[in-house]
Image (cartoon, rainbow, N blue to C red; front, side, top):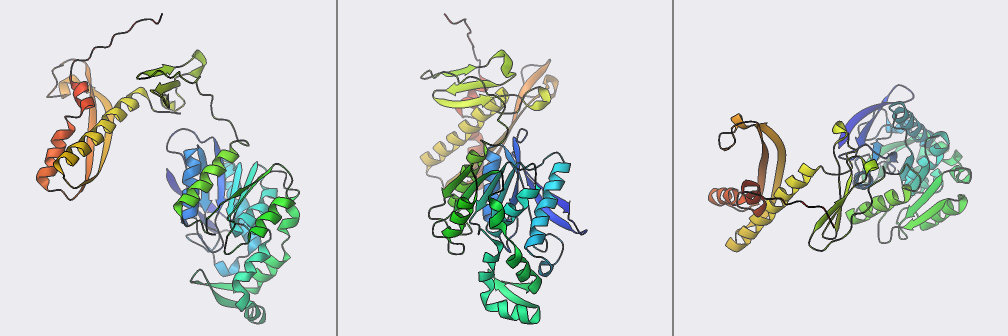
Length: 406
């Protein structure tokens, strides 16, 4: 789930941000993501890493630095120190909403800014840099050809990543005055350095400098084969998954899960203890799952409800059946998406139901069929959906026999 937000900045302007949350359940921790120099919060790497963190239950706030993306202000008025202040402002905004960041993540110069800001963000327990230089002045190599003009005239229009930006002498003076590397040793937070060995913009030597300057606990992960911006989705997703796994040592543990259910070939086994609430560990013929109930009915929302699993069976069976039928007919069916919602309705409101009193279960199913199909073929697939084995099971007489185990 993603939600746009406006964040007040020191100086009266606002920063544009995105709250990136797991689809279900309460986040186990919050992270703050700082994008690369002249990038925005919506760069592919930022989105993919946030997605990967959300998969592990970690919510992320990513935002545009002043003068970039949808944030207010002029980029020409900013410098490294203002970026650090932006990070502190966002962290304070998150804390005021009871979501103080425990993890700080920065990409490229955003990582350098995170290293500097971490000293002022008490809630942070873990810091991550991705392709980051050890000092802010490293960014000056991007404008080497314009430095003389900037210093002589006070500012210049430079081209960065194919786009024009105004850079002023204040920016140059500010990055030269920074000593981020000197503060790394006193960070007193867990540190993860991620870097591509063949990074074309920031040498691996910068990562080595960050790592050797830091005290333990510290870790290094090589993003082998990746480029500086992590443009390959496999690289950005990998970085996010490794980051989430590493950070799990420094954030709140997930709510306890039930004892693992035993494996029984050809059977589905579930187990839950008194202290587990509604949580049930399931072993479906070797595939481990977790069932739960939503928080609104007393559960922890850590897994699908029993009716969600029942709906999942109907969804999976429908997709399989339609593809099998289309293959048999040699039709150009490309994909099938099935959305199913379960609910209970009054029997008197169901014209086709034999039951006329009380309530009956109803599954509302919506098919999205993609492919080069004519209307006759699409209507036929709609009919075939009702023939999937799980659908037929739900409509036929079902016997459930229960006994106590020996």
